[in-house]
Amino acid sequence: MIKVENVSKSFGGIHAVEDCSLEVATGSVTGLIGPNGAGKSTLFNIIAGLLPPDSGKILLDGEDVTGWPAHRLFHKGLARTFQIAQEFSRMTVIENLMAVPSGQSGENLFKAWFAWGKVVAEERALRERAREVLAQLRLTHLEREYAGNLSGGQKKLLELGRTMMIRPKVVLLDELGAGVNRTLLGEIAGEIERLNREHGYTFFVIEHDMDLIARLCQPVIVMAEGRVLTQGSMAEIRRNEAVIEAYLGARHHKQVGGADA
Amino acid sequence: MTLLGFSSYLIALGTMSGIYALLCLGLNLQWGFAGLFNAGIAAFFAIGAYVAAILASADSAVHLGGFGLPVALAWPVAMAAAGALAWVIGRICLTLQGDYLAMASIGIAEVLRIIIKNEEWLTGGTRGIAAIPRPFETLLPAPWNNLAFLGLIVVLVAIVYLAAERAWASPWGRSLRAIRDSDVAAAAIGKNVAQFRLEAFVLGAMVMALAGALSAHYFKFLGTTAIEPLMVTFLVWVMLIVGGSGNNRGAILGAMLIWLIWSATELLTNRLPAEWITRSSYIRVLLIGLLLQVVLQKFGKGLLPEKPPRLVGERRETR
Ligand SMILES: Nc1ncnc2c1ncn2[C@@H]1O[C@H](COP(=O)(O)OP(=O)(O)OP(=O)(O)O)[C@@H](O)[C@H]1O
Ligand SMILES: [Mg+2]
Image 1 (cartoon, each protein chain N blue to C red):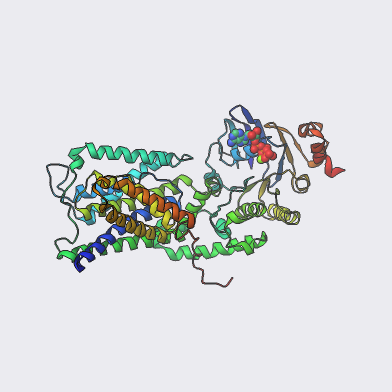
Image 2 (image 1 turned 30 degrees about the vertical axis):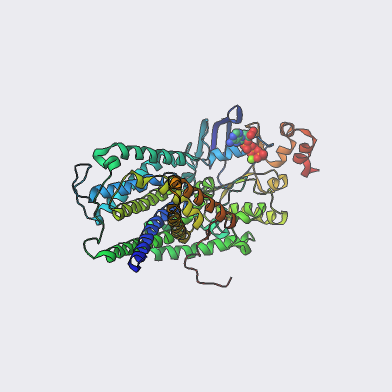
């Protein structure tokens, strides 16, 4: 589904991503882990068209999409969430969701002025879909709240909700779990598994929560200092000396090996 | 003051408020909807005024003219010209992040002002364009023609207001607000950020140009003083912020209120002793600036703050 070939990106002197190559297989839930600053989010931003790579290629569904703007990639079926929530703060929660689908006839101003009936019909359908998503995310009571007033965790849920408004081929989730309560996160993990199994969505997931990664992801890719260190099942990763080395220090040692003990 | 004098004062007040209401509605499309900081409102106002004046005025030795077009033709062309200028500026500036638009729009407005001042063959320079026909002036006798012109302005404000309200309630407005709040997230949900911004910018500029055209035909004379940044850009920004950006009614309210106050300060400063009269222009600006501060202290988001539109097609459900 996604193929990253020898991608590099530096910011001034920092080589955030360096000669990175990896593949996300169609129909997989692939994990991406690595210490802070490993370049994971930067790689996501490159794949999703927010940052152009300095060199290298990105293929989506076999097509070279290097340098495509983000909105075109979305139309090709790539949806994403942001590590730092990017809610539309002065819009209500339900508006945040209803904004998502593309090709709404009311986005054409002339249709909004002269074909209002059609717009109204579309809006009704859109609203029903948005309410389903809100119910799944336990946000129904906040429907009319400004998104800017949500808590950190709720904003992350709203980010996920946006990707659920459409039928994407592949979803990039950047630390979705951070700030979301455990019970709900468990349910969301279940939902991700279901979407993957029943609808064949591909997921590419950055997470620091190793339990979540172990539950969801196969394979898991480890990045460190901008490069891919290794990849494999979570069990293999946990035994890998280089990975433990990369995370450095006892605390991280525990974090990676922890769930085994 | 006689009754007639008073009523023509009211008509003049209403006419100017209407012209400013259009400017504010135009700025609201750019800033309130799309978060585009246009610091060169005067440029689009000027394009509208000069194109309409040149096309509609009689032949003159001083400036280009003599086309004698009816306003029904001259005004749309004036709007299209401003839209074209906005399109060019927008294509260059709106794809970039940051406040390039603010700088570029100030620059364009200033360049345009200098061109208008110096290219006498075209604009009459400082001597300006005289004898611009005002609609209804020969059709009706004295107060009624002015009243009819005011009526025309009210109708135009109403049309622009209704169109802007529909735009606000529509997915078009929602996508623009999304872009305003987070352009990266809007791009990530497939919105063509540059395209949407360009649409809002061009549309706003066209409304501003309509205001410019109306103003030229109202005063019947157009010179460089009519397009000063102070009287156009600064005052319109104050109006929108006081009224409430992101609220079309706020835009109209702000225009009416601030114009009323601005005219009142003129009455005041005219009574000042002679040596103060020359200082009156900046005293008035200072007063308006102070007023802006006071309003913002009490009403941070303007008198009529932005509200999300009622969900389209939603009956008043009790939820
Ligand atoms: N826009 C930017 N400008 C300058 N440096 C940047 C920028 N974005 C990222 N970096 C740098 O690139 C490196 C990789 O950052 P990135 O956000 O990709 O890490 P990450 O793996 O996502 O880390 P975390 O797990 O903490 O989110 C860091 O050293 C960071 O400081
Ligand atoms: Mg990150």
